[in-house]
Image (cartoon, rainbow, N blue to C red; front, side, top):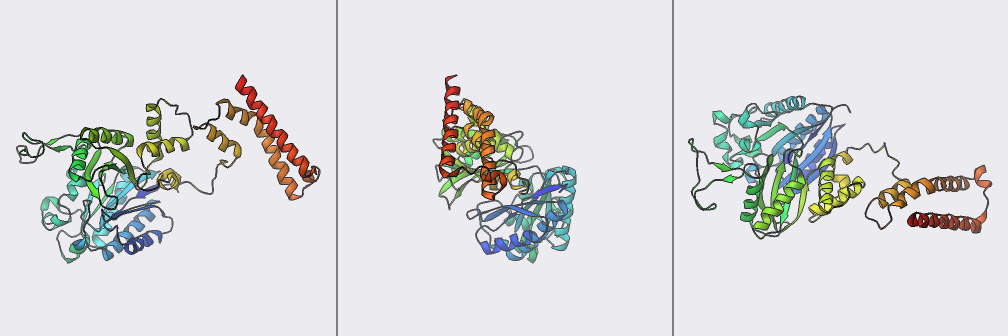
Length: 440
């Protein structure tokens, strides 16, 4: 594939797997599209789906998914912890390979137009697909949520980019969809040892770029400060490019900080985690772990692992696999559910399974193991690779040819006793080499 984009639709259904599976079936019905992650949430009543492919195929799969979601989800009956205003709440396209953001934005606008015209669902375009500056921010487009659509749709300032500008019978059921082209976003939740939504919001407001409303006197109950236009004045938070709120997740029985990290080149994931630990501690609260919704770039995990290794004054010269393990444990990504890097890191999900590296060789596996925290000495991997590998390769060939009944195998008719003796001698020679290296 020359051009690859990712689509991350958020559907306003996280509890009924029959509905979710019907939406997924529509996505999987398009040839060339690869479904890589499905993340339903009961408390949020929302499912985040991730799929990739070439632009035309991805847009077709997205359209089919929006259509069936509009048929199966009734927004007039929807309740959940997450902000929302449509059956397909958001529909972002993300450039992955061989395509610019400008091209991706054009695909997003075409997709939004098709949804508006063919499905008669109001569409707002945001981020890089936005028609005006105030619509770049999703929070502005979604302000008022579903309950405020009757007033918003008839406001000339908020006329949809595509589709009907009225809260008719159909829109009552489907709500509105926000379509965008954006950079890779990490949806990242941080777990707290409290059930208090008020404390969770307070910590999130400390961290998110938007910050919190400025008040006179008491920061919680004081009068809200407003500008000359009557709009609330905000005190900026600690981290740019980070959006966040606090909520209580009933299925886990804890409060969480829910963040969207919009640009990890500016603010890495581990920095959000560390700031959360600091701001929670000020309030006598402890961060117990975290959760990734959807998938994450490999570099974000490597950056996190290396950060914690350096913090512990340890070497970062180990395999990616070991660095990722450090990241998972340090961030507590496996506290609520198992974290499988092969299913959560986008580069691993996109790997062509037909192009295998020679990682199944015992030599390389051993080298990776000894480069990790195993008790083996530093000289051991070098001795293994330089001295033992040729013998190991010879032994493999010998065993293979013997089993296959080839001539080379027949010439090595040494019997089981001699075969065992040969193995013991190799092992003894290996141990002598190891002892010499240790004594050098």
